[in-house]
Length: 104
Image (cartoon, rainbow, N blue to C red; front, side, top):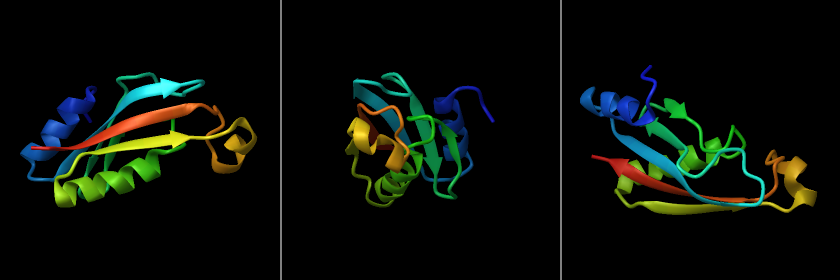
């Protein structure tokens, strides 16, 4: 796998796969990954990179599949109170916004 997430996405596209790229565009409070962190998802379910250290990756990947299917970018918002943080796996609390777009 390529070291760079964008390079991996490009390699998947070259191989004929559909690809979506997710990028952390804003955070508030505690966040496991900084703004600019990226994750690529292909139409076979492969993922490269991380937008949250694992706690919201499956939700982002699910939305990435929708983006690959309809071509529409999405701005996803995830936030959790400190009280609920451990229940849902977002142990850091805080909020994060992730922009998901198809790679052409």
